[in-house]
Length: 511
Ligand SMILES: Nc1ncnc2c1ncn2[C@@H]1O[C@H](COP(=O)(O)OP(=O)(O)OP(=O)(O)O)[C@@H](O)[C@H]1O
Image (cartoon, rainbow, N blue to C red; front, top):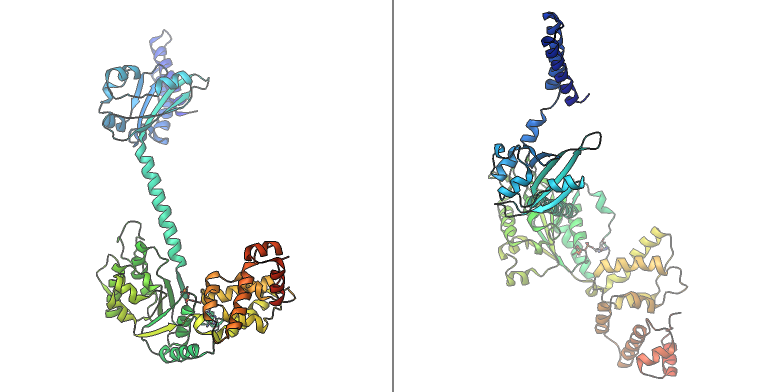
């Protein structure tokens, strides 16, 4: 039985009892008491075992109005009275249409529509005194025989939903910021994970860098590694850490440009509890604290926001940090390595990098030259990566001397990262060719690197240079050409000349 049915049955029993007492049949006092006791028990069951829904609905934040099938208002909650400014005594017992006619509160009402349609109705309405529209919803409640019993009308300011959506978007943004912050940090606990990566290069530049690494590794001096992207700055930082006496302590690598600026400070320096909304209630250790006694690599330091540069400078100068929202300095013992592919001097000149920080970091500078300036290493690096990828993909690619000359001639704008990628591509895509033609190599080179390739060819006679240029020019010109006629049109020479020139340079059109 529902609570309502229990109460109705109790009411019915009391009526019967009263009729009995008033009727001609005599009823004993004992009998009356017994009956009343049973009624009391069933009422008690309802009042003690169920939630007092009236209190709940009274205190809901949504405006709630309940009307019956004749539009008569039966109930309004506190929120409704507050937002309408009409006390419940002026509403209860009146019809919705009457209130709509006599007050300006009901500009839009759903109750008559629900009565007419016998289905939920939703409308937008401006309630007096509200800047934003509200969503008004009317819900029908039916008796078990399908007759309309009540209409429950609720309304809520639309801004609540839009705020919710904005909060949700903020939450999503925060989540994606946190994800990118997580990816921007690498924590190395032991050296062996790094030892797989060999540093290749026997040329004078790499020999000097190796010597430098072995000299500085044992000290705690700050190192600033500069060089173009892909030249091996991170590998050098790894080598310094591996050879240092801190190699059994954590090595934390942070890519400053990948952590969203608004998170960088708290990621680096940590925060105290309650420092900002959304923060962990207990506060959090920053990466500086996590790297204590170990090594910290600040990669892409040139992208660090100016405000944080001041805090970083203080931390380096005083060997202590203060968490965001905190006042207590925390002493630290960290070996710092910074790296960048930016020209920090130029950044200082344009006012985006602090010169005092630059000089604090520039204690031991290591500049890694681009690959085009250490050509002696190119063939070694190619062989190194070809071996690695041959083994990985179970292939047997061998580069010819001619291939190596072309690879040495290329200017590698993406440096060793590009070389590594091209070697992987060759092993995967060209190891089944009978002969790896240089024209295939040119076709996968970055055009930027090919342009500079032309500039770097020195120590040649004019006719050698012309012939070499002609070959490369033809290689590029016929890259996407299907037949000799098309090639002759592009080059503006007759077909027999194209054919002769291609033969002379050992080139052929793509099948
Ligand atoms: N001397 C080297 N011998 C073998 N591989 C190298 C050498 N230097 C770099 N590499 C490889 O080249 C790739 C790029 O190196 P790394 O990430 O250290 O460059 P980076 O200068 O830090 O680049 P970025 O500035 O873009 O972060 C890596 O795969 C690395 O292992």
